[in-house]
Length: 366
Image (cartoon, rainbow, N blue to C red; front, side, top):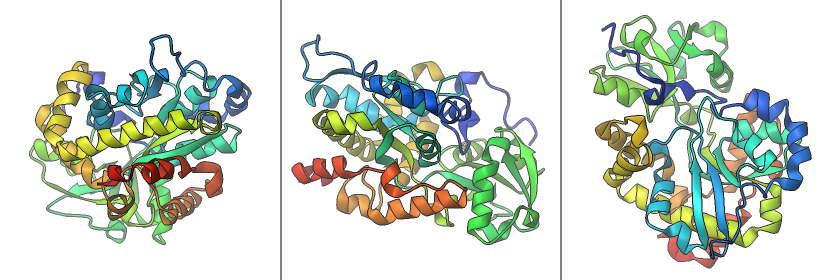
């Protein structure tokens, strides 16, 4: 099955950001430059803040996505296309694509280039520890999509099944893979780690037994190419990190609480629609917001359905989309510790704004 994955133009290749530090620019822009970011905090809500010259209550804001415009941001597409952002008082919301060539959300918040962004605990926490005043105020994914994908004929069903097997691990994924091993009482010596890139052809060719990937992407792509597979989530085996976290500068929480609440209300509405209508979510991704990415409608639809399993949980059904329970926050702090990132919950998370939204609009939980 060599040739199963032919090289494709960069905009079409969605595998290149499947890393623990997938939110581009962390090492150079968000961590080592955190002193600069903190110094820029004075303007953190400025450049991305926009103005009310358009006659709206809150003006225009910039939101940086965590990657190129694909199905991952279906909720934002609905919130924009159905007018939820405008109804909430925004003149417009500029959805800025992320990607390998972009700076991190944390860097954007620090310099004031953006007002809000989609990131991840393992990316935001180091920036905060280096001095960036920022907080996670909600999360799209209740579980992160990292997984080990393997052949359906020789499935790796759990971490213990990896013992003695060859696992393809990208250099940027070594940290989270080692954290998975630690969380399950294993060490790198228990497996054969094969240095890998992001095209999973070696798995399809039988050169390795397992592959670090995203459950919402590579397994679906492999299956569409005829390679039947099995995967298990890191989140189900000791690393329950959330993902696609809504992250803002502390100044936004302190000085623009009503504005942030209005934005989060529109986000919840958008994601309710995205969960309810996977086919329309895929259409918006393929034909409107990500039309320059040459996305495949069928694959995006399948990814939308897989994504819903990460967005919706028993907790979100009880408390509302984008929320995090205190227990889930505690689990994330513990998981970060396994990756040698030590931070206190109240330095990283502030779910109080979102809880106020649902307290004031309980109908949004339905």
